[in-house]
Image (cartoon, rainbow, N blue to C red; front, side):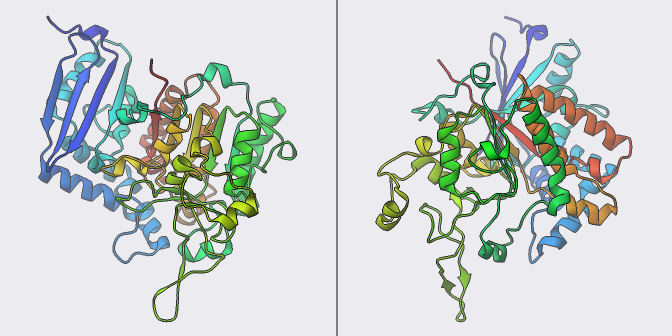
Length: 450
């Protein structure tokens, strides 16, 4: 039976690393014909190397400021010519010729398309939005892109998500640039907003929502939305005492490569003041060994969000904080329908062979949609240092995400916003319109399945 090309609306792409990297794809229209290709390893390695060189992730002995300066001034995302060249190399590496032909053929029918993608670890940081269908069109101009989590998310899911229609009237919870313990600074963890000036657009955004009755004023909520001292205990209280529509986190996230469950939020938690499965961030003593201290910062890890207090909670802490025995993570930190994590590589889940990090833990705890980032984002202050102008690309991204999360179809809304940023990039707006920021976001969508 011939394929009904005009009726195609969804494309499923799955990738797997098994020596070489393999790509399979299926158009979700009968007869559901599967296609597959083995990606050329040499071409893919070269493209991924160029992508890594373009991102603000430390390479070799680079320090933080040097890393960001390289990405903003010398990397492929710094100029339109460099970015187009990178996009072409990535397209050649990960979009087989037959798949590109099929995409163009279906787009010519005028039907809307949606890509549902499960990347392999090697492809986890590919910005699919900027890949090229032809010399003129990028993928984001043709379709919406959602990540499909592994099927294991749906097996024994701890908490099924509430549909947006039933929770949209609930207030959101904002955790924006939360304070960090003093000793966290030694590990490169500092406030992400540049003082009161950096907080201004977020304050204005939240004030507008409060005036509309769409958010709680600071004195009505468990935690203040911006720059507050938020611990894992306070976060639990904020999520359990007031039903929420969505959670918006803008701060620091870290993870240990190839260590599932290590991805972590950074709040005001220390070794002595909180329980948890993440090892506190210790300093180095005079003899070069780890020197633990009660004030060392303890991250809130994905494993905590999964296991809660089921394991390894010190009895003294249990008594001090009234920590219950064997309370799973989804009861301590129940997640609302929509969660945004605008932080450094919040979507590190997909970079591990065992796909488990903050995204998967949050889906397991009740979220339907998680929007986060593929890679580290430069701060607005870093853009200001490079451009000499007051530009706020990272804050703008964060505010666009929260605005979109408050409407019926946030993925479509953000895709349209990305198209406007792509056009600004083409029109010469400069580094503030670079895909380095707007192409970083991903959406993992996992609704309740029958």
